[in-house]
Image (spheres, rainbow, N blue to C red):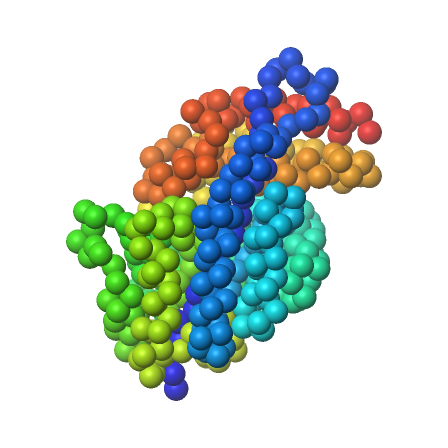
Length: 395
């Protein structure tokens, strides 16, 4: 039986907030920086989404469907593409029409709702599933949570919604001696299959590709295919999961990242015992080897692979608590503008901007961070949240 490489790319951009002052509270409900959001979406579309999608489409045609990929595109990224970069959205739709690209479900707002509100978590997933059906003509069978956040109870909720497969991180402190390169199942609901990210091989592209001080620089497609083949001599599946912005944005075109993307599938498929499948195909083909016990939430962020990048300090905890404190009032308001603003304010990025610790992939996130300090991010967010709270409690 052939061994499997699974490629998945995350596509997300938040609605960044404008500078919202204390004196705006109660007077101005315009929270979002349209110029910045339009500029960043346009830049990322031209540097990453459109050229990378063109390469992916050519590769699907070149290998007659033997090359397959998967994407998860947050609902608020889809909104911004439709508004600011329609050519990028059309290029993803063209990929969907090939029949060789899987689109995954996630929370519509790229939110942290799984950590506090099961109802909001499930509601956001349902809205995102409808968006995927609307834009791409697929009903997702595979789920990825925001930032690959996962625990036994989160997986149980996801399995209960009818998803058959979920993606998460192959975190060292969870895996112990076990390899991430196999199929696992949720410890509470064994019907939910788990695909685990191989963080070393994923980060070789996402974070180290253009690092000239890295011992393995330059990374060629032939060298990388050899690493994949080596990992699969004994194991079943290598899951390469990363931000799509790694192509052309985090790793600039001048680094040779697009040439690498063009060459990699051919080098992989040159190994006749290897194939490239989508997540749902990989989960259908392989047999799970064991339940995966994850009592506390993990993610794909920084060395700890936990949730401390978003909820690791008092600023973040205070903002998060106050956001979901008004969940019921917003839901009952029947005010679509208020509900839209509340939805956009749930994006995990807003909490990431408040992070006060140093973490290994921080430079990537600083790239899109509109604030000079975490404290500035907190004050601005809380001013906006104060106005939204006033609107919600007046209803």
